Image 1 (cartoon, helix red, strand yellow):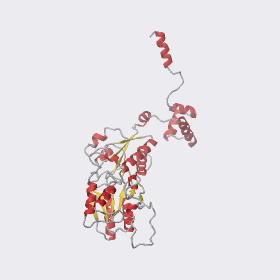
Image 2 (image 1 turned 90 degrees about the horizontal axis):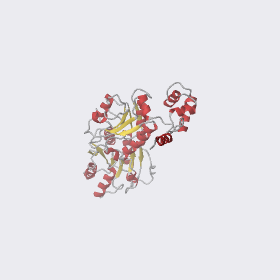
Image 3 (image 1 turned 90 degrees about the vertical axis):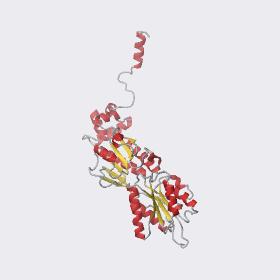
Image 4 (image 1 turned 60 degrees about the vertical axis):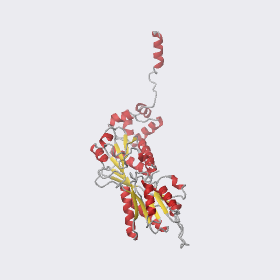
Length: 389
């Protein structure tokens, strides 16, 4: 190519001076709003002593132009990565398994959306007890982390706190665990409401399928069941199993219905318990709900179409996912009170055929309304496949 040709190509490829391309920058916002770049920065970042009308005007102009702050520029300016972590640290040995369950999937989706709304990205990290927390968590530049049902003296929480990062727990932690904030449901109220519902439907011996872990959800739900049994004078009828084992639930359901003191109603703490109990009932020739009343904790829509449809307790994972991220980002950005924050999310008991039995001696009692709640709260999730899918 001749020198003249090269010169022509060079001119053609060079944008005209003064004409900007690509997405709008902070200079464009400043020019359109008629203010300085510093004013735009203060207005969009909630800093400085600006009149409300100026701050509102700048935000409105930025929105009209489609301006979005550069993540790289924010990192340089604030020293923050814009990344927050999410993990279940007590779930077992296989990384990421927990996302296969509806509770965790819905919670993570809501957390991701809430993070993006505040300009952060969510990173889901392995939940494997075989991995060193120092190895996993030191390799990712996080501004803070959400931990689902951390165990007592949880090594991941200890490592994050050592690094000076804020930690928000999905699940009420042990009193000695130094989390920044936590979000949970009222486990005891939910379980007591379910047991009262089953008793009002004619149950005389209510059993429980529970887990072997010590996470808050399992521990407090089981404690509430035992307290209810003591209050009404019923001997506890329960079976425990490692909830992260995909086969153990079916075995525990079979054991429960094979007992000589077989229950005539069962509450299962974990999502697979509904299908496991339906299958076990069929094997033993038990009809649901005529011979066996059934409730399980689940976010899965499958239970609306089982035969029969199964009553489920919803822990509202979307609300929990949004709340934990909001509290975490507030802590990262220094918004709110410096002391530990707590938030309780109400649960919902979705009543279906499996838990409603009309007693032959009852002729005038009105039916309970569909959708009646289990109380002001319920189990706040945990590493033990609560409300899964």
